Image (cartoon, rainbow, N blue to C red):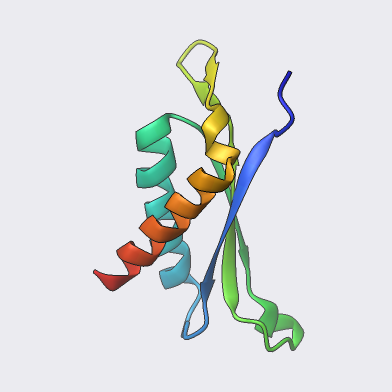
Length: 100
């Protein structure tokens, strides 16, 4: 019945001077926003385009799976995570986290 397997968010770091800082900041936020709040697993994929000669900034893709986990099995599907409104809320929360 589900049409989405995951939600994807991308965090860009145009002024990054290293890879560790952006990775830590993004994964920390993903953990607090998605894992702690919704109980869903997140896959973090860091891209460093400059290593291949690209002008694109360092960025991280967060793939947020929609099924919450328990120690024993899958619990329930967090259907709203992939909605347009939820992605907008995540984007706003990420922007707010960058201010502090």
